[in-house]
Image 1: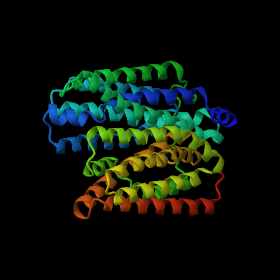
Image 2: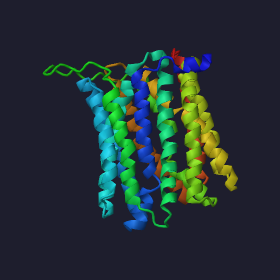
Image 3: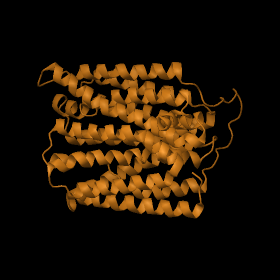
Length: 397
């Protein structure tokens, strides 16, 4: 009982409700994750090249807007308006898909959705950091990631259930798009009525201060983390490996859902642990797990191997993504925290794009195992470099 009480302590009202908002929004978004590519190709007749174009534009947009949104949030010293605007745009994008008569409209909808994600993310993470004591940052970001990932697990299952009960080989995808609007709208409602602004807005007419520069330690952390990010390609390559071994679409979705469930269950305990053992040490463990998983995917030659590998992949997510945001919180200040979140996550977004391009080249020109070997090596190098840097700097977090 003491452990569970300690897990709950230090989590503010804002953190709790922001977790609910993210969970609802991810149910909405992930309902469409396995549906939109099928809708594009089978209903609108778009080629796979267009599917790749749409996703590339969407992710590049989110990365750029994360940086811009973070700077604007710090400049005007407000968080909630950016968070509300971002979640609202993402909600509106769902029913817009139901109106699509061509792939250009799907591109427009995905663009709106990713602008929303970019606009809200940096301000939201700064709001989380500003809502709890720094001693609980790992726990707070871990809880938020747990709720977000739980939504990511429930979304595809909801879509599969809807398709099943429609009882048709050609389900009504447009109805699913409209249904996805419901949890997204509920999330915006919770955000508007229950989440409070974490900083005092700058008085009207007051001059904006000069941007506070990023610390040298922040820049070093991003550079060392980038070694890992350059090998951390899109999860689509994990899916491609499963397909290569004979997995059906339903099997892939279930395996990916298993990954998200493990991630969701472990994210809060991992964040709690990072507050006690040290965040970089905990992240280094996550990198070691990532390396083991990627080596497993490189060597896998039996379908049954995919199930434990996806489950173990959830350990990596739990021991890395939320904790990295807690590290960024420690390496920034209240005056530049949203900007730091934006630079960190925006940089990772661009590097993921580069990593995915490299992985595709290696898959085609070398072997399907090559992208996973490169990713494993990058994770081990990054984890070792971060550990040595932390010992040299003697950080207290």
